[in-house]
Image (tube, rainbow, N blue to C red; front, side, top):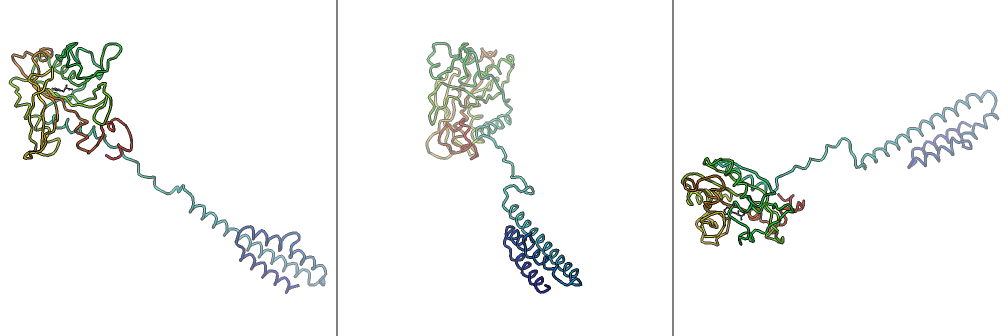
Length: 332
Ligand code: PHE
């Protein structure tokens, strides 16, 4: 009996140690400790022993049972730990992991260019002014010397609203409003950045919605030379290099004379790049703004911001600007 018990205990402990998973442990438990298990059949033999040996034999069997129970429990706990460790290693959610860095926003290329232009003019003593995007016909056209049926209206394909107002085709009306606010008292030094709208078929170089910075300076004795100086300075700062500028006559109804300003890098004899429209404010526009053209004069200009941003960042299609497409925006 003693030998059989010892042999059973050795075999069972070896089986427990060698079990590869929890099911193998269940199997060992069943065959050794179960109701039809080997330990119970050994116990049944106790009754056949001499009475003096029975109690010792019973205690020996119980001692083996306890050892085996403990060995099983320990092995099960080990399997459970291993399982948990594997699960933790595999899991996608680690509560201890720091969160991913939050994506930082950044400025749209147009906003950057606009702010640069604003900074330059603020440094020159200009104010930055704003105005409505829905304008009256009077402010967008008539009072800027573009009467109805004037062919100049055709050059600014216009979105007309049902109530007879327009989506402003330029920010010039904002400058007229600034003149009126000055109440006939010079100087007026303002720039008007903003969205403008034209009924254009969009393509790589045209959009129905684009951006301008227009500017105006009115004071006594303002000349074309002042205009050329201010604009050359602005462009040099904006482009970060010295430039040569050239004025080329061009018709704009609200200025006289009107010119286009071209530029190229200083000292180069390369191609002239058309940059902006400008000129001396037309006397009738000065009068509309509440000024006496006999006493003051002024210059005005209009710069397309989109074009500057396209050139600055090497963008090949104007339509990207207003697309809101993250594939485009994330590059800046
Ligand atoms: N308002 C003109 C435009 O949008 C630009 C401009 C402004 C031209 C001032 C000359 C002088 O086309």
